[in-house]
Amino acid sequence: MIDCHTHTAVSPDAEGDVLSSYRQASGLGLKALAVTEHVEANRPEGPENYTTVHTSDEHYFYNRDIFHKSMETNHEVLKHIAGDTVFINGTELGQPTHNFDFADEVVSDERLDFVIGSMHELKGRDDFAFLDYRKEDPEKILGEYFEEILAMCKWGKFDVLGHLTYPLRYICGEQGIPVNINKHENIIRAIFTEIASMDKGIEINTSGLRQDYGKTFPALDLVKLYRECGGKIISLGSDAHKTCDIGKGIKEGMEIAKAAGFSRIFYFKKHVPYGISI
Image 1 (cartoon, one colour):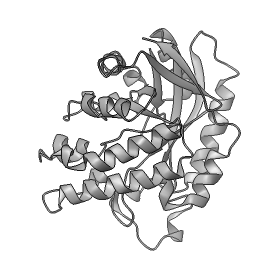
Image 2 (image 1 turned 120 degrees about the vertical axis):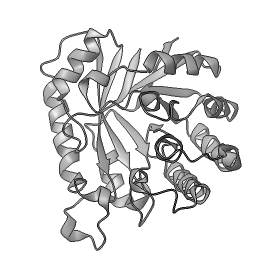
Image 3 (image 1 turned 90 degrees about the horizontal axis):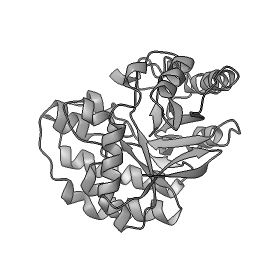
């Protein structure tokens, strides 16, 4: 098993440290562990540089500093780890379409092994976690989300697409509002076709299994659609924000990959995918 999406206290919303994460992964017998701290591309500097500050922004400034701290911390840990688990120096790059200059700065860093491309909020809006979907049009928000994801995929400077359908954690899981994801099949198909054409991957993010949503991001039907669109690279990530959650749901994620027709999962070193038979 592998876990290619984890966070420590270097991320503003997580806890723990990298060495403890590695020891946990090694103790679980994981083949590979990626530490992928949050780096939000739309807020590289401090709050004084922005005219609008949302609820979710409070701790999510100085992302340039967060990124360099994560690279230095991960690199230092490499000197102290001992075990068969492959350590991957990664990042979760949020909203690259909101600031391509900073996003390009991040992905060009030679210390990086692995980049997850994610979308946690829309331009000028709060994080999806802080929206009241009873006062919004969830279908409209999802449409805008998928459009932004497609733009990110056309930029393409990441290794895997992170937690596609992330807003459903809050729309369906926390606020209990049903949506018909099939309404967005055409643009999701376009996203997958774009990713597949560039030999990029998607992750099966298992965090939803620990939450009210109860499913992975994305769920089985969309993993099947990704394969139908020519997708070949599947990664797995728990999205752990504390050490005890590392590896959780990964076994179930592997079963979803198999059910969708995949025979291998992948981790990355220096942006090169390495396949493991399942």
